[in-house]
Length: 160
Length: 291
Ligand SMILES: Cc1cc2nc3c(=O)[nH]c(=O)nc-3n(C[C@H](O)[C@H](O)[C@H](O)COP(=O)(O)OP(=O)(O)OC[C@H]3O[C@@H](n4cnc5c(N)ncnc54)[C@H](O)[C@@H]3O)c2cc1C
Image 1 (cartoon, each protein chain N blue to C red):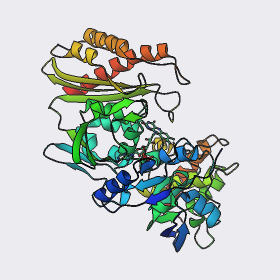
Image 2: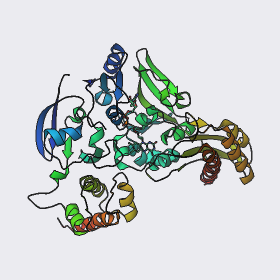
Image 3: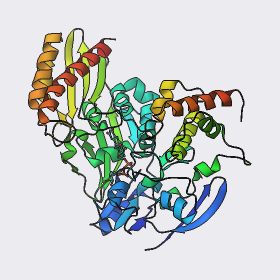
Image 4: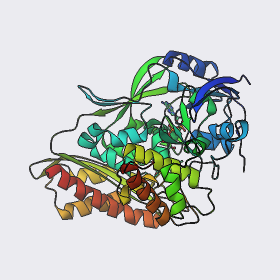
């Protein structure tokens, strides 16, 4: 099959890649670029583990063909820490024990980032409803929601 | 479980005409791609085997614009579920559609998935379809012989089946203006918040003084397609709307549906809860129409 030329930016780095049309964004990230922070679990859009930000919006990399993201700006979990310093959401997840096995965490944190970018001061209910597409099978969500709210208040105080 | 997709040829037409030409040349084994939320998992599960994939997102006439026009609201076919849910125009004038989309849990599904893609999947459990049915929505469709308007009411033929040919593309959804004193409501019954409906119901009701001048009721997950329950509607039309009449209409609605038993519910339960959902949506729509 004819390959597609895909120019895109991933975590602020520009790439020019050749991909086969049937390759998903998830496979491109994990297998071609070794960015294995993005997970894949249900492979059907149900669990949110594969979430990445495309132009800032939370999307399912398992349901996205790599050929369709030409010119887009992708953020994966690897792109959140800056200069060796964790993002406030990552810190809050660590501090609140919002991570157990860690498999849902990249998708959870990226969805939470999209929420805080849209709505810097969400209520508990707003956090719950925004994260409804991300399943966690270990911690039970309370700590995750606590962590997102803590990160929000930290960031509103100007914390990094 | 398969992780990868089988190869296909990929097209990114720059115009709708080019898209229709590609779809018509390869007249079998083609698929139109929008958000991919439904399509990509189906490819992965080997449920469909298209040889040609046509991504319509780059065609210059395609967009996701939501705008008021003289005839009503125009929603471009690329509009994501979330952009429709968050649209102030939809919230203000077509609240039943807002409510229906708000009932879908996953932010990612709503951000990536289009309303048109949701409708084309033609599952009777769609939450968007009952809302569009009661809103008398139309699709503008472009195909090899030009353009046509298809009412959503005539769109569905069965589970997974619509009147669209493989080389026809939906370009926009059109929602006619509603009368003054019209209220709408949507409700669904689910096992867990993130699951699809066991039963859902949407209502649009117009009142003149105490009398119902017009009403449309649609239910989902209780027949091979989403369904208008027209006998129930007839009970209310031209009548003073009182709780007893709402109950009678809800009862009739429950007689009109043709539910099946599956992993989500038994047919019997679906029939019973159709009655409850129709009663509740009618009552809510009535309050909103009066407000
Ligand atoms: C986890 C999960 C939960 C969900 N929950 C719900 C729920 O609670 N309620 C609900 O109603 N839905 C639910 N859905 C369904 C979801 O809304 C749809 O899968 C999604 O909106 C499909 O849109 P898409 O743009 O991704 O379509 P695609 O997957 O790209 O396409 C779907 C179909 O539509 C056709 N198509 C798309 N656009 C056009 C067009 N312009 N013209 C002609 N044909 C076209 C395609 O050819 C394909 O056959 C859920 C889905 C998932 C994965």
